[in-house]
Length: 198
Ligand code: 5GP
Image 1 (cartoon, rainbow, N blue to C red):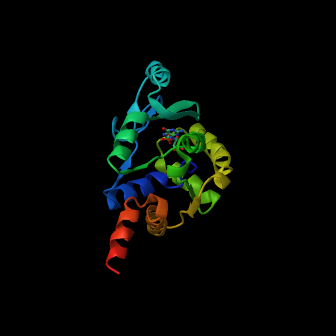
Image 2: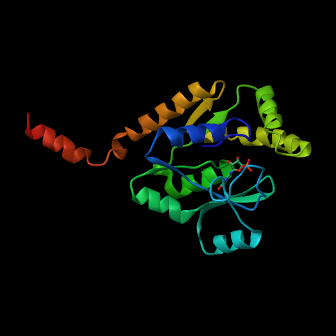
């Protein structure tokens, strides 16, 4: 799931995780400083640049990118463990990370882009969040345009005008993707069993 900062992606991810036991949130590592209220190990693992670089060198990151001057990356092991247990994994990452995941696992990836209903809503949400200095907010509005320009690289686009509606749309996308024939493991045996009873 990608979006410009302030489009409601964090809220939508949390709602999805709460609504569905079979999906795990990937917790990224970042060199960004924690914002007030952010918890290490829950929102992110807040690490040093040195540690980040050592994780790149050890190939411990599935993807990584420089976003707004800070480094962000997806630890590989928790994702592989969750997938091995048959769970789905939700990534809150930018377009650069999405491109890397698409290279690594195109068939397994569902790309979803969240858009704000208009520019004012984005600005209001960024100011309302009130956790970043005003120059950071201005920079993020400018960056929003660049992030948004990547929307055609995604499989689905949800306009988040109303968070409950947007959530329903996200749940519908997840369900439809899980019902794709190639994702329904054991279908051959199921149908074979079905046929024997005909
Ligand atoms: P924030 O600093 O507001 O939490 O996140 C800034 C941007 O970095 C968001 O667009 C978020 O999706 C992206 N991001 C967070 N974690 C990762 C990650 O592990 N990889 C990549 N490529 N982007 C990330």
